[in-house]
Length: 483
Image (tube, rainbow, N blue to C red; front, side, top):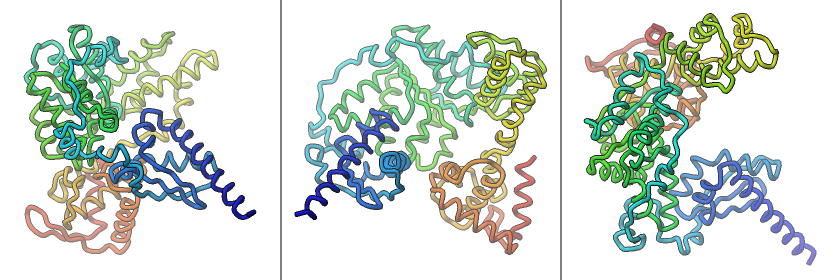
């Protein structure tokens, strides 16, 4: 009898802890994501040493494992104070009334045809799209220079012409170069010029989350009406859809519907469409059929103008000398966010000390920041150098191809990126076609071994078979990326 009571107490405690874990998890990822991916879709069981997460179907299980494992582990640690392992399983009992809801485009399409998601089509109200309010960033505050002039002119053309000559406008570039600013600026300009136009701005992750929620709540038709009845659809970070075939298929239909209606689509990504791994050929072809524009990092003159404009936008404009602005612009060259952060740091220090901003102050305040800032070598430099050396394209490095030349080039790219940038193994893996951090570490160890033994490296080039010593290859590549 006593043993039974103890067992029940343990079960009750575990149940209470699981409930607390869910509460903490919802706070970490937000209620919208929690409702979509966890509420009524998962069943957690806490046992000594691990947390078993049962999901309604393989799609949900895989998504949660890839996107929320860290947050789940943190939530368990917060509640129990211990480290645990996660085990993912499929729990058929969770299907129940949702057994018909498959998170796969083909199943959802057949379900729709069978009338399972059938809703009466209706025209979406303007307020459901742009909600009659402007976004944070506008074209009037977009600093234009040689690095982004083409993208800016294309944006102005979309706003000023009733029908632009290209669809979509696909803007790509590194972090913090102004892609989001440009997309929001287009939407705001559309709001000012054509107040009755239906426009929508969202991230690709928001698109994916709303799609899944529509499937789960049987409102797929409403979701499609909302997305497709737009005069302008602007989607940021479109590369988020890579490796998600069902969502790519849904977006393809959305794209085709808007395009056929003569309406406009604007997209932003951190890479050229052909360099986004695991993106369907159909989507790549649609994207490159429009205007693909790269935004480069700002030059020195632009960086100075960006700093001055940022100072003007502050609630209490601060007087900063040209020498200070020049110093910041010369030493922080990677992106706009880093520039603005440095300016803000100097201004904050000046305010706390109640002193006027000076060059010596700026140097002292930013000394540590400059030591930590990103080096001049970037992933794109490394990929270009390696691809050129081996006679392949940067897109091959992101592809699942495993032939000797591509695999060797990919390993060397991972090694050089880890050596010459401050990117983590996980970040490098994500760039190199969605590989995990263990794959990156293994590749780096292989290259280290090749260099240590200085073995002969063989590869197939467009001119035929090639052979060279490992150290000579690395030396040549490092010379290329440092130019």
